[in-house]
Length: 624
Ligand code: ADP
Image (cartoon, rainbow, N blue to C red; front, side, top):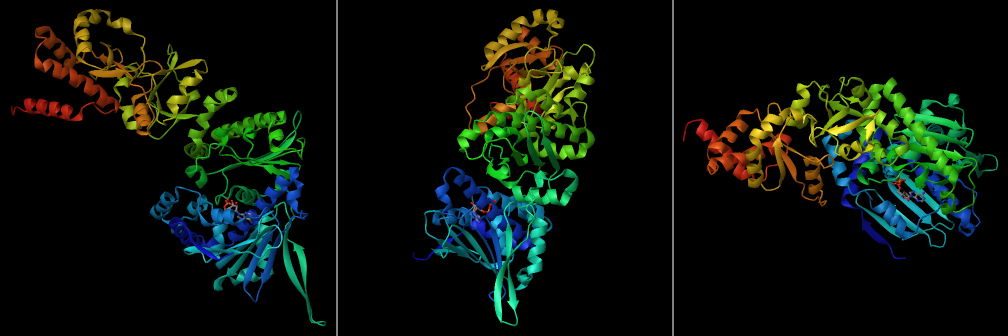
């Protein structure tokens, strides 16, 4: 094979630079990352070989070997895992799958990288962390049925691909250590790092040590297993330290931060399994960028890693949960498809879901501040469950928090709090969806409710309006949008309705795109507002969908006028006096535009609107 030199994507070399410089004080994590990769590679081949034994090529003595060469100043980590061919080497180590790398890099710069290793850890440093300790890295790899390939790079701008030397399946990563990284040539350093980060790794992590026989003048290589390989999820909770949990979490998640919550339990009875689950503190980078809509729990059967691709093991809305499930009763040696159909998986999923929801509920009552942080990161994801997990929708609803007319900005209340403080005679949970608190708070739609002393929930997250009203009711109370449908006390306007009848019909004719014009009971201070049907979309959601290029049918809304507002009264008198007065149609258009402005929407014709306002000001200020 001819040697080929290829460039890293620009963002990648910047990233390498950042990683090597920012995580300096944590640089020993490179070993954890390389061992994790080796372990994943072994898991992959072991699983594939369950149904295709020929892939093994007779080599199933799983092992991760570490070899130190003091003279050459190299540290080598090799495995007999799945290996990579040329294409996967170039793809996995030369390009970066994340399309948002650039955005992430600028965020790192903005937020002050030096003091913020957690941020870069969120990215998942992975293989590239090797460049923290090495000025050159060689990866020699061979896949079943392919020839060996070698990848070399100094981690700056490019990498070279050439013929490899490996004779058997697997991968050898050789680190040419930097001058200042000679500590990693010491056996005791390696021993202690493996103990600290990778003790629970399932496959043996073996250090090749050299035994010198001074008398004979010979040297002999001996294998020393460094890890105890005790699957952490099989151990008793009382024996596991939080450090061990944290390290295990980092091993499986490639997250740099500690988890926010650990859930470790044995399910017994109808279905038996062991679960070790983690709720992360922050969204890992790939969750932000790839927006992978599936949950990936690692499924083991009797300690054998099967897959992290079983969709029916955990519903998508709980995809923020990371961890391991080890089920003793599931069959080994069957294909993924057959296992996927196993009814036991449904039972396991139900059990996991209820355990996770219970944990969150406890966090909410016992550690509210921690829950708020969780909610800020993962609340929107949790809400997706309202439209997919009907069995648990009440429990999910219990976990939700909202700002309301009764909270300070940024503070939140639960639906249960809301229902508890409902006034006598109030039958519905009243909500208003808006783009942000400022718009919600000052909305004309609240005037009537405020006057009646009723609390209104603010739905400020775009997903709210799609999912929450659809659960129908909470604790027997229906959801009711403040800006949609009737408010129920239309009877009180009977007399005015007669007086205004002709006027309202006239406006309807003048204005296109308005479904109906009627008098309002919800307005107290504002002259006009636009009201949608009970199940229509709020205008800010409509605008958001349009911005995202989604087709949204034109929605006609009802124009409501406040009969006791002086402007409405004045326009009505103008109508009685002279229907052809040009100021009359101008004023009607202005009333409609004002309704748009007040709800936070754009007016149809901003130029016409501003010239009308300017004319009014000129008149009022007496310049014309
Ligand atoms: P991550 O492990 O988080 O996916 P890395 O940057 O560490 O990210 O590795 C990138 C990819 O390279 C891995 O997903 C894997 O496909 C491949 N890879 C890395 N190390 C090995 C290895 N020892 N054997 C086989 N494949 C590997």
